[in-house]
Image 1 (cartoon, rainbow, N blue to C red):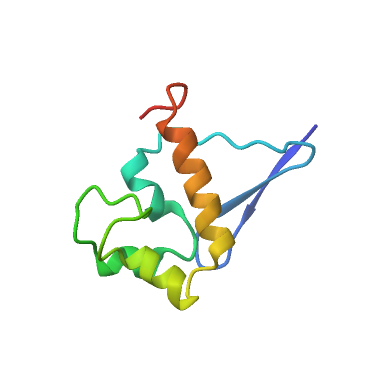
Image 2 (cartoon, helix red, strand yellow):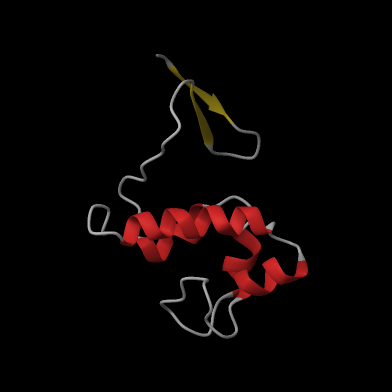
Length: 94
């Protein structure tokens, strides 16, 4: 199997990993995860009431407000929560 790296307009890289269905985040601290999610940038820049906000159920969370308004698709937020759960598991703890 081959992986190819593609530049993305506006910055960033996309790895096409044909045949792979799993992704493992390496060197991503769970509290910084939202900063790495495309589409979360504006909400993250707005800030949060709590420094350790994980964008689950915390009050005054800009990410949750953006999901509620439809600015961040619910499926994108679910993908974020799934990866966050993996990072918080004993195997992926960071």
